[in-house]
Image 1 (cartoon, rainbow, N blue to C red):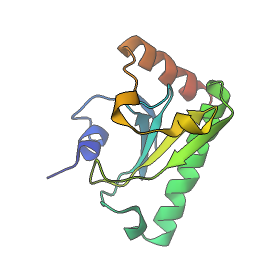
Image 2: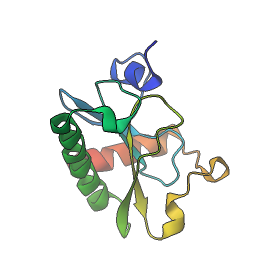
Image 3: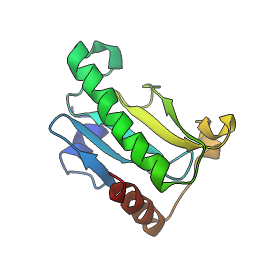
Image 4: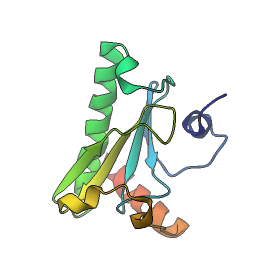
Length: 131
């Protein structure tokens, strides 16, 4: 059965898409830990990020870097934090999170934000414009 991320990539589930290539896909997390939190997902569905071949794995990080650079220009923050957790969805993915302090990269469910669809679209558009 396809993961929720594969279903998003296939267009079966809507998302706030940031960018897409032949191999990778980036979209806003709908339960962000900070506004502008982006998920970068390989289209080849594997549960564990280190199971990818070296070239594909390197391409994923190169794509993530491009997205992070656009985020940094679009969203006022000190840095873009990176996390690869991989427990909640069995499809490898990279979290890119705008940060001003270490506490901004806290994945405790009680601290997640609930932005409106309008806020999400505005943030997605700001990031897309910086690509």
